[in-house]
Structures are given as structure tokens and as C-alpha cells.
Length: 101
View 1 (cartoon, rainbow, N blue to C red):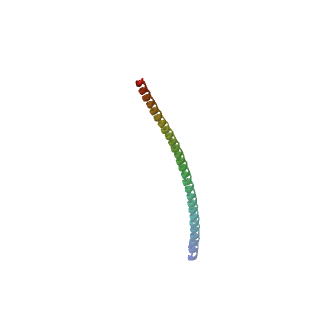
View 2 (cartoon, rainbow, N blue to C red):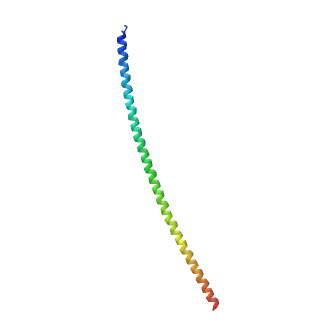
View 3 (cartoon, rainbow, N blue to C red):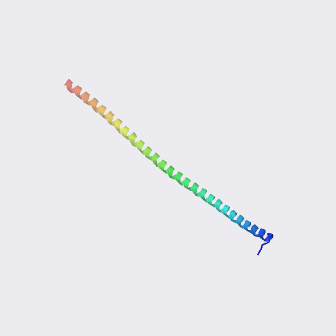
């Protein structure tokens, strides 16, 4: 059973159309995958950025809180130093008065 050249060409043309349709479908699938990948990638990046921002915000708040504590401790220490100086001056005056008596 021999095929004529026309039949062979028709068969090859049909196969070529089928391959072309397969390629077109594959290209469409690849494009869909690319779009989905980019959308997911951007969503992941955005989520990570939001998480990092939250972490940074929490760290900044902690630093501010610690800064206020340091300031309060420095004020307390400064008050203690002034009180000790006042007490020391009072003791010296008292000692001076005591020695004069």
C-alpha cells in the first residue's frame, strides 16, 4: 500500500498543524505560569516587606521605650547625686557648727 505524494504531504501538513496547536497551547500555559509565578512572587515579597516593617516598628518602639528608661534612670541618678551633695554639705555644716560649740 503506497501513499501518493499528495497523501504524504496532506498527512505531514496535518501533523504540522497538530504540532503547531500543541506549541501554541504550551506557550499559553507557559505564559499563564509566568503570570502566576510573578503574582505569587510579588505577593510573597510584599508579605515579607510587611513582616520586616512590623519587626522594625517593634524594634524602634523597644528602643524608644529603653531610651525613656535610660533617661528616667539618669534623672534618678542625677537626683541622687544632688541629694548626696546636699546631705554632704549639711553634714559638713553640721560638723563645722559642732566644732564651733
